[in-house]
Length: 137
View: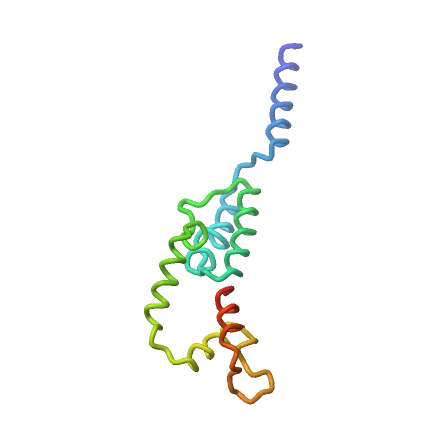
């Protein structure tokens, strides 16, 4: 009888140690959630904006805290070359864009310093501010 009690106490104790380490098993529901939010989301597989990077960092931390893993890591979040290649392709595709088009893209992506704030629908003559803002996107 003492032997059985000892085995039960050791089993319960080992589970407590297991939980204290933070090791968790990922349930199917948790894995499905993290697949949708991190592993397979366009935010982490295609987007190279800083907002996406920050969002994916937080999603990855939450996934790891739940003990889950991706079957394959999302390319845009984990491979620097993915975004570098995407940027090179974009630059090549838009190398002949006129200045007005470039400023229009800057405005549409949220670079307020590139747009006229007085409602005149014209662009400010501040190309350096726009370049700095676009580099942060």
